[in-house]
Image (cartoon, rainbow, N blue to C red):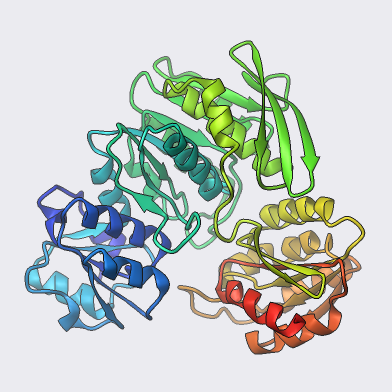
Length: 470
């Protein structure tokens, strides 16, 4: 049987009249389901378990089943929406194919939702969710009422998407399965280009080819914003610079930048950023610490300006951004110890978040609970993960979170642990989530910061750690 991605077809309005989502609770899928429900579609779906996101969709009128079974596909379903994580033998997918229902990849569904809007797509190996969120919040703050689809929640379950009345649609563009090549944005951001998603890309050449295909989809007369302080994005800029009908805007601290970052001044858990754009200097606040978040904000500023939003107004509105769930999100404080949650799972993200947190920690130590994500990623980057974690004072390393992957012989968290120890880091292995709160409560002292880090269920540990500390 072919994969869902191979079976997928482009989506029409009729296809999406009564969509059934397999894995409706996922970050990307739930956002699409929410927008379609708000547009009046009859939405149904299934997910492995109940969640706050599923509850939010039910409150919008969606019918959501727990678990996957053929009978969950409604008789009146107009199509099946899948992500690349859905396997070909999923019983709902098998039933839909047997019934002749169109199988729509989530990227095709999102492309259909963006039709008729001015699309702004945010791509890059790291920082997509944060930058998309910054744009969604700031454009909303300017009363432009954009539609948006984000890979993470802003402040509460179900806040990852919105059906707006304005002409702008801001979307996170996922390169992991090449699905971002389905979009045709007016403005696109590429924050960085690095090797990741090893199950789908064998080399940097394949990564560059994929991003070049994404850039080729920008509409004639459109704009590409790149952060040229990142070597991969600078290389991409060179590769696409010959296209006459494309405006390329370079941002960064480099003298080569068109929108140049002049200063980034840390102020505890925030930063003050000064940038030169269109010949004028603007200073604004970014509510999350670290240079990488400042760069994300400036890329958002440049992209919004390319859409015609006055830069000075957008800069002020960006100051209203208060972060997104799981991006250095403060979960609470107990016994003088702050607990913060981070989605970082790639070595570059791990290093950037730890640099940011270390700068904000003062005299306290930084203790990390890290959960490697995916066997393929750990196999390729486990040593680099351990090296990045050496920025912490001590690390608890959990077993690998498999997500959609099957185990790979010989690939375990020991790849990360051994590397971190080689770099002089104090590491404690943990084989279950239940062990961790007690471990951390015994390690943490007044003034320390605890960072739960990874793309899996390590995020659930924050409240338990706080309870043990208290």
